[in-house]
View 1 (cartoon, rainbow, N blue to C red):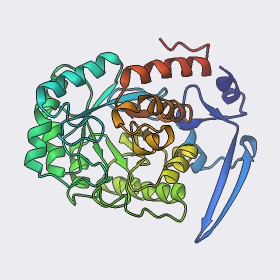
View 2 (view 1 turned 60 degrees about the horizontal axis):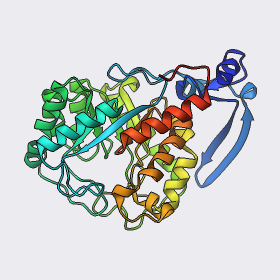
View 3 (view 1 turned 90 degrees about the horizontal axis):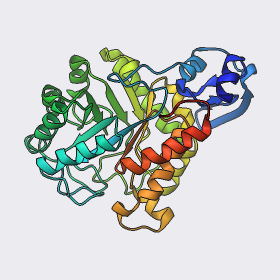
View 4 (view 1 turned 120 degrees about the horizontal axis):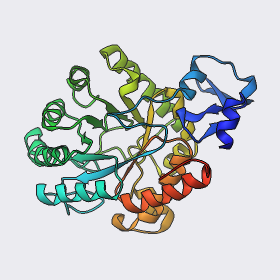
Amino acid sequence: ADAERAVTGGKAGRLGGSAFIAFDAAEVIVRDGERVRREVVGYGDLVKDAALARIEAPREPLCGLALDRPKIMGIVNVTPDSFSDGGLTAEAEPAIAHGLRLAAEGAHLLDVGGESTRPGSDAVAADLELARVIPVIEGLARAGHVVSCDTRKARVMREAVAAGAVIINDVSALQFDGDSLGTVAELGCPVVLMHAQGDPRTMQLNPTYDDVTLDVYDALEERIAACAAAGIVAGSIAADPGIGFGKTFRHNLDLLSQLTIFHGLGVAVLVGLSRKGFIGALTGEKAAAARASGSIGGAVQAALNGAHILRVHDVKPTAAALAVALAAADPEASWL
């Protein structure tokens, strides 16, 4: 309610088009080679240019899902070597059952993946990946759910969409496979562009940045421009800063603390931090599956910084935490 009054009174702008988060000042960042200048400017003094318009503009619905409030993407791993669950849903039947349970617990989208991209992992053949994901996508889509396919391969993208997937989630931002950019443009489906420095097998050996937040922002901006050149419109793109993908412990924290910068890309922002190693480092929890509490804390923080989509393993407690956090942020809104 306070945010709405500030926006309508011209004293603040909507953060990423949010219905409940506003900003009354912004940090203006100018990078010239190695030199970076930063200045905090009040909303009334900001130049009302295209950059500000990108931050404030309401995000278009993604596959019918309004993005004025955060949506939950439930993770369905169909791999024997998942870092988070050790292959508990590596077969189609338990994977479908898991996806149905996540949807019942509050997931708005279900992200089905058949290739582990954990640090140190190797790529799998397209045939094997397809054998893993297609039956699961078909089963979940047949049940009426919004299904995403987590893949880096153009052939898998094409067959996943034919099986009922309506979103592609690519950890390489359509760079791993030379045909993937054209394939997504041809399919006309939304896509998640995730930033990663290096290949999953080697990405954590020595990730290095001049300024991690600005470098990741610039890389995602370049990929969005590549999509535009291929005919993929901004309204069908979500950008993911890639927590844990070629980032150190400190890099991950820096990205989360400066998450609002990614609204300047003018697209939906997706955050996937669930059960990742930096959470274990913060909490002392070595078992990935036991990192739910830390993951929920990160998800709430991301949501309060305007993240449009939260990719999570633990849907039910995340949905409950968000319900309380969002209601407290705007008591006059209806969150039920």
